[in-house]
Image (cartoon, rainbow, N blue to C red; front, side, top):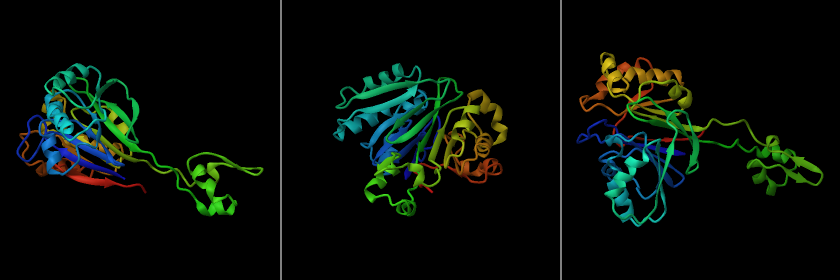
Length: 302
């Protein structure tokens, strides 16, 4: 199971009831934080979400509304007694900006490990047991989205194993993908495993115009979290100028990528009630929800 919580859903400027865009992905006792704008740690506190379990912070890009909350968050984590290293992964060219933020932290009792990713081609890596693919985006500076997958083993079929007279002590080895030899017989995993299972998948995209990489990489996501800076189609030219999306563009990607559910986020501070514009998205992709701070869900395997 993967727990997903929107920590903040605002863009550019935090509001009293809407902190800046951020998201927490929890799996197997650890978590990944995507972005850390001003107010992120306040929202984490309000949601009673553990900061010390954060293993990795994925940065979409180094605009202030996505990284200015880092010093406070990192200091709080240090005050909670952390000694294990913390990973920060960000687009190419981000290290100098992130290091400048770390200067104001002074001493931290744990190591910060910064890694940069290509901003022109997808890269795959693994963190906390999740397979992650970066999504090159189109914004004013180097920017990435992220798609996180929990790969699932095919289900073990005990009836098949019993029918083949395979001793129980070898079942786990077969389930883990290893062949076993019993007397003169060799048993392979495909003899006792069921059909391949669809991964559990959550994808996060913000601060971008629509680009082909998004649809291709987020395809078949259980949950697609996407920016909707502006609600009305009439705001299209404004979105193009500022390199953001309107609701209908996010919904079109969700439809074409055949995702299960769309959450909109990263709303303009001028849009105080984004729910008033949901029809611009729901008319294209019905299973659309307006994101709210601390909105949460649990994604389960089939």
